[in-house]
Length: 240
Ligand code: NAD
Ligand code: ZN
Image (cartoon, rainbow, N blue to C red; front, side, top):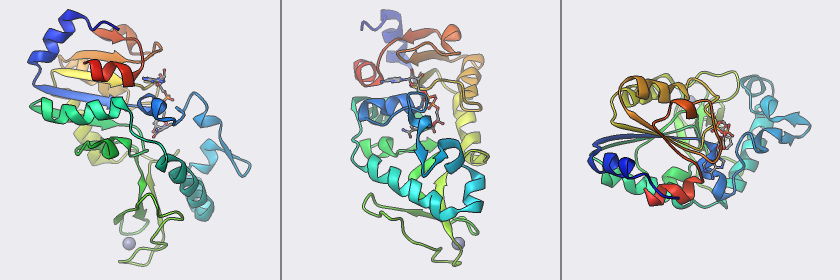
């Protein structure tokens, strides 16, 4: 893959950079994307959308935990790839850098990124259902702990946005503001079908940013990107 010279020039002088990542950036770490099979998982007879839903937290939180403990155990053995590592490095390269992710796998953090806006939560965090205290779990905490909130005694649940739930308002607002105020906006490894996250690319573009997509496939945003780098994130991001 040859990086267009014009893009290299633009990157050299860019000060404010935003990157939005989706499941595709973790594909090379061995985590299936949603559309490549992640959504066809069936857990104890329940399809992905059912076991990962707000309704299931109300109906059977134990089953939800079993499912998330299982996934955490699998993710633990997956390592950040060259794409995650390149983005961790970009934090030191640009004057203002913001990483926004739709992923819950925690691989950006494990690669060394410090400031990640996690739109859909993090599989390694749990949250009290009443007081919303967030607990960090280590990869070894399978099954999860604590069982109940150490402050108020209420049950804790995975700190992940499930089907039927809203995105965390403050984090999304921050992501919107950063997208509105950047020179470059990269959209990496997302099918760009899921709003409102995909709308961030539009906000950036209409606010004057140069929009660059990295994806082996075409997506609904491809046609209004300034540059499309067709290929794998783990190969292209280190080149950039
Ligand atoms: P998606 O599955 O809808 O789309 C993945 C995109 O990545 C596709 O466009 C595909 O062409 C592209 N892709 C595949 N391999 C790639 C590679 N090596 N480099 C770059 N791009 C590659 O994923 P989405 O748009 O993120 O939306 C699905 C939702 O499911 C997200 O909200 C996310 O929270 C969730 N999810 C998360 C994970 C994770 O945390 N790793 C995994 C699966 C799903
Ligand atoms: Zn509590």
